[in-house]
Length: 326
Image 1 (tube, helix red, strand yellow):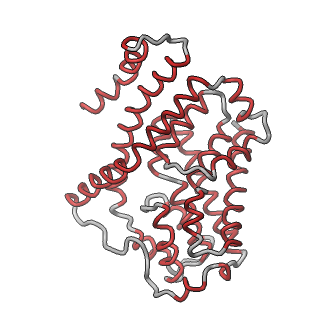
Image 2 (image 1 turned 120 degrees about the vertical axis):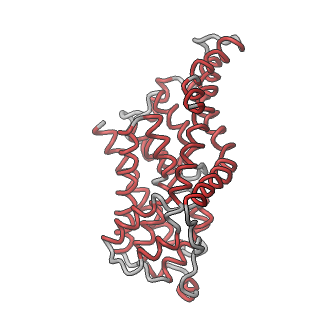
Image 3 (image 1 turned 120 degrees about the horizontal axis):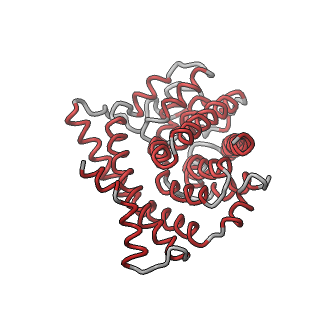
């Protein structure tokens, strides 16, 4: 009840801070930027606390070891679908990409199925999914979920059909089977699961809050200073090159899902097309440069280039599709 009461008063508080205490004009750029930041910062952080706690409890049922056991022996196609679906609730970060990849491949999971999981796990982020639902409504959240899963399934299947196992570093197959991240059993009992959720809040929110505030600050700058006509001209439906440009800008960026959402919100408010913004967000989350650098430990450059190319093509299709139909 206290959480709900505070959350419901955030907008009046932001207006009071920007236009009352600081004396900024409602029609001024600094006033709009400060009001945006004062409203979005506590709102996103409060949503993040709630979501991460729930996700932490939910993730206690889906350890990477359990996921790997489910996927062992699965054929391609069905395995790609299952791997993508399991990627959503499974704990994953860039630092765990290598041990997860080794554990999956040495356990007999096909390469394409493994990559479907590695694409879906960061891209279809459950924290981003719930935040999108809370900020933009269920339609945008469902679009994000469906298109992210489709990219992971199709990209993994295509890479599996290309038979690129020769571009996996040889030492991976020579490693002892069963090596993987998160081999320890998950928590048992609700008391321990609730502690798992609390620890997830301490760990995840404790690490990402500076990035969240940085993302909100960027969003506030866009909201206050970037003219709507300018943003619509470079990221609107009329600019055919806006989708590939958004993907190229997004790939070298490093941001977590929670940090990119406020930027997405500001871009949409300034007239950017939904498909272009979704492509930008997916490229930041699903094709980050740090993850590609980490995967170089287990994949050779031709396979990394194929991975980035196939996933990038899928993101481009999503961007153009939604710009055309929405």
